[in-house]
Length: 73
Picture 1 (cartoon, one colour):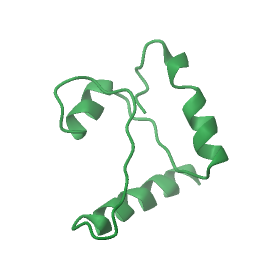
Picture 2 (cartoon, helix red, strand yellow; picture 1 turned 90 degrees about the vertical axis):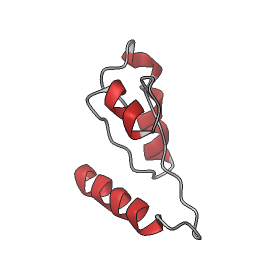
Picture 3 (cartoon, one colour; picture 1 turned 60 degrees about the horizontal axis):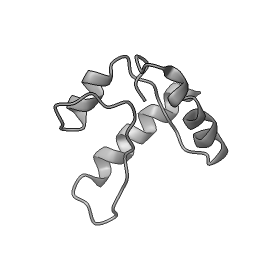
């Protein structure tokens, strides 16, 4: 989720939902950078990482998930 979202209230329900469902989450400083990380040229205020057990990037996705979880501790 992007910390520079305006108004921030449009995101504030997501951390509660993530915590309720035991889903790790992290705020990043810039919606522009988040958009670039998602591979689009527009700003993005929130995104999710999903997995597919047959995916070639499965290990990378789990590595990112583990790093996010260590930030929450």
